[in-house]
Image (cartoon, rainbow, N blue to C red):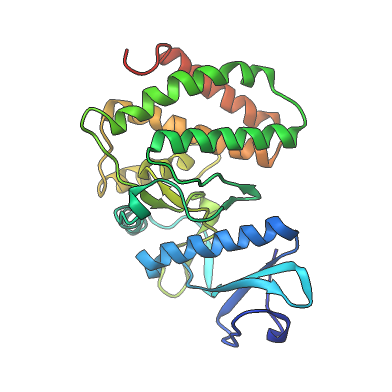
Length: 296
């Protein structure tokens, strides 16, 4: 829920009377507090790399008079919702992904971040394959809990997804002399989390759910048909950062990354079976293509 912070006496933490700030408050207790902390820390990390690419975060905290309500304050921009033009937007995104400053070169993040109302498992891992698999299992567990039942068709496919497909597509990124460096990703970069600043006409991103990842993971959210990032954006992005080796696996890696975003949607909207069915169809396709898994 978005709103304006009207009385600075109501908050614990730093006061800011600058009118060019925006406060977001969420009244959902413990998870609301963690979600805003995750948004603050994500935005802070992005802003440290490219200040002009996101609103400057100012503070987050809890209202003194209502311990169940929490706030997040950042710089206000007058912008319109929409997808920025590909060239400059993708150049900035590539710049973000090209800064490899993850602690000890690991994949993960120092706090929980939320994709919508989904807490992500950001536990630090030495390998991208391990981190991705852990995160996917976590989302699947949340989907099952929220749906209140198992999807037998999905459950039957999961062993082969984790034992065959994920190792086959992700392990080659970090074996046979190859290595990928963790990149800071927005983590939920669909068109609804981008805008165009009215004054400069430049693109801006917000509402991140960040962690240190394989940079191509970000593009998985551009694949579903419900999105508005076209092939022009993918091409513009890869004009700055080439596809990772092995390049022959690229399309299927993106399909695997896209699978996680479809499962996010399935957990966010458990009453809509269409998202689960999209995931089932994608898993079937990948299993049929890679039945033997890694090393064959």
